[in-house]
Every structure is written in structure tokens, then in C-alpha cells.
Length: 80
Image 1 (cartoon, rainbow, N blue to C red):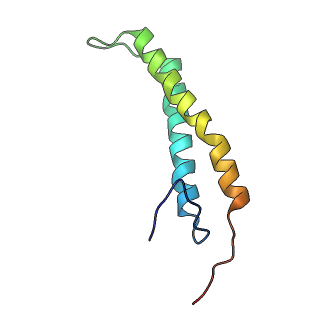
Image 2: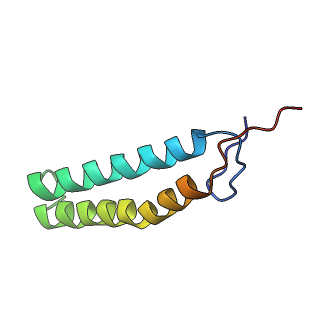
């Protein structure tokens, strides 16, 4: 099985699933860090919020790529 987030091989939806899971996980982690504001050892609450913001931006950044992949993916597989 070939995996590529850049090239759309039009043969499997595994790429879209991986990208979708990455987006959902980063958004959930980011939102939780921004709401909870954990503070431990040398990490302040401001650093936790900033890290959460970075996770949210990472997730939002890949949403257009995920939408593009869903629209350009050919659902028909070529049988050889």
C-alpha cells in the first residue's frame, strides 16, 4: 500500500482518513490545552495556551487540503 499526503493516487481513501485523523486530533488537543491551561514543572499556563494555539492552527491549516482531497479523489478503482 502506497501512502502519500501530497500525490492523490485515486486508489484508496486511506490517505484521506489519515489526514482527517491528524486534523481532528490536533484540533482536539489544541482546544483542550487552551481550555485547561495546564501548568507543571517548567511549563507555564501561557506556554500551554500557546502550544494549544499552534495545534489549532496546524489543524485548521490542513482542512482545505482535506476538502480538496475529498473532491478530487476518484472513487473508481482500475482493475488490472
